[in-house]
Image (cartoon, rainbow, N blue to C red; front, side, top):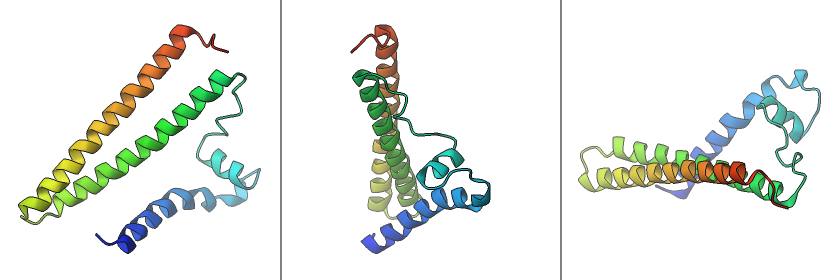
Length: 128
């Protein structure tokens, strides 16, 4: 696929995720990025960190969330390539391989999130 087509798809996804935040802009109490964050139901995730370990854990969780978004994007790409193969075995195999690798990535991301949170809960945030 050409780069211009990927940029169109990426632009559409970004627009689809950000435009709903501006639809009810008259109801926003605050403006700027904080208004967008409140409309999606989360506030700045790094404000609650009081120690360096809590800050690091929050950064890791944000990175895992971003990795999950990328993995879901690749699941969509792999599924699209697989479904639009049109009888071409090479294209179907490439789509299937992308889909399989993306699902493995999602499983690894979920397991790493669980492992990090279990370790943090066992240690009891006693790290300084």
